Length: 340
Image 1 (cartoon, rainbow, N blue to C red):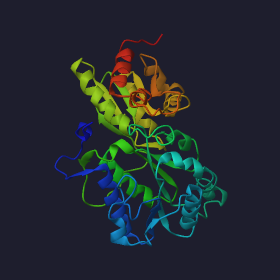
Image 2: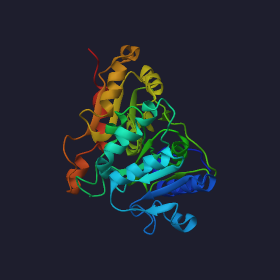
Image 3: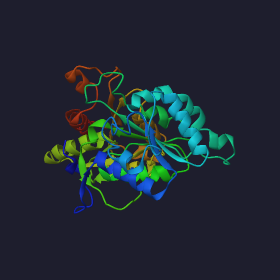
């Protein structure tokens, strides 16, 4: 899917999502000797998805560190390094493997600042390539971001564009708290405008990618691109679609969502993670518990992943998570519904 669907800042040079992350990492490491990158195959190999590239040549093996296969140990090392003044950036080769590091991230990194009365902080970043679409099957294709958005003390990001991939990464490295960045694997080759200088995008601030009057579609990561493509077809049917790119799941920008829903009266939430107990349920509940609920003219709709492990078969894999046509069909259905 072309990244040009949601480009911004016309005239700025074009980088791929992976290149934007690499540039951000390089700029952070040049500016601050405390910043270092480590993880499985991030050095000599250049990263499982080619993100770290030439960073080993530029910064050496003391700051771009190839590690053993031990996610729990790596997460513990990140916590320890952060507590002692460093700014570690840990790449988990596939986001699915973060399950092995849950104890250190959820019970240590997320809680230390609270448990020590603010006298200690854990400024660590965990980069997590995730999502389906590469034929990697059930153990390498999950979208687990909602798990971590449930945890107080963590910040959880899902950039959808190269511009935001760089800007949110730099903001995350600056942040005194642990930040998890879920990078969809299908986005690494997409291209978009990226400023050359080091810049920051605010954590916890959503973006309106497209303005419309009839229906609000809320999503993040690759779902923003798919929603944008669906919106083009809806426009041809006379339906004005407003697209909210969350960018941040925790903290979440409810004010931007609410403002849009007050205008359109219809809300469709799309996400790749399993629909049950997913981020869509939380957003729907936030709307239902607020005065925005009265502005709805139709029931809130959720479009999430199937309650199934991700299949290896390409056709079944595609059917297990929302695609452009699924978003299009869900939006059409919602346009024909009225709240009783």
